[in-house]
Image (cartoon, rainbow, N blue to C red):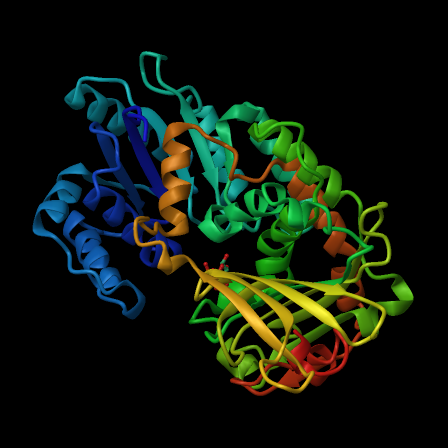
Length: 475
Ligand code: BG6
């Protein structure tokens, strides 16, 4: 990997959920594998009396969590402790931004070089616009004090609450930051398995020649989660499953799976191709909402969020079409939900033949867990009788012993530090995605489809599990 330029990462929301679960462990991993720039500083913004040691404790405890059972190396912890500064400020107070600026200048003076400034907004989206404006008015949108390094702003999803608020956010950003300075995070794009989709599709002639409506009967994109909302009541009850996962992660995956081959592999062309596709996606028609946009809520949810009237969906299953020659007539089923039976994120392309009608091959791209790709095929069963058997060709990433696996947020951070925007969403993509889900949000807001209750640990409401056809298994 190329040498990364000196940088300072300023995290708004340093003690928040995202920082604890994803950012801090990722920073640790990157530091541990010496993948951060030599001159690298971290500034945590906190209103409370947080100390560097509190953050170090957070890092250690996040590493000991089940899925990250990594011991913390004392040397790495020491390096992180030395790199960390806490700035106590109230991010809603304009005057406090001069304190931040002075601190950043002072850190640069002590390091002796200008640092690219990366402002990571790991905060509720309702606070984005205020923070962005204040960064602008305090001149923090112009890189270091000597004007030689860059300033970048990294924004977490959801980017807006709906189409109008996303447009407003784009407008607010444009008042202070140029397009090149803005990084809209969608960590699904940074997963190795998602990145592989374009390579896999376009580097295998077997697939390029069959990737269309003449060979594929339907496409399934499913991202089920076994976790519930994990205490994020305020956030989740305002957002719901459609905004939380579909508007961002799953429509991005859909774009990767169905977009045309970009003219070249530059970020610009990839984004162009993705946005073209997203603009062709058709949401369910108004009179089909009750069957093509199913929503559900797990049974204990209302008491969990202390809102007995909450109509927020924790489950969504929708059916979309794409209005172009390649995909005309191919239904696309997208499903997500909390408190479901298992955590599985996969894309399945169902290849078909009309004769016999039930004969199909399935290509499954396992985004997570058990990252890999499976292809179900039919063979003649060995033996004297002429019988057919279904078999699976199965590839697991873990069988590639030479490669190191990096968490998606490690990639997000490295790409932001090195200024590579390929794996970040553009404003056009974000708007196109809001345009797709907006009619569904409106229909649900007007109670045009029932909010089905489902049991935690199940596969969700029956209306949803039956959506792609024969039975629940077909997801
Ligand atoms: C986040 C959502 O963007 O993605 C969470 O806000 C969700 O609700 C998470 O749990 C899932 O991410 P991953 O990488 O664990 O599949």
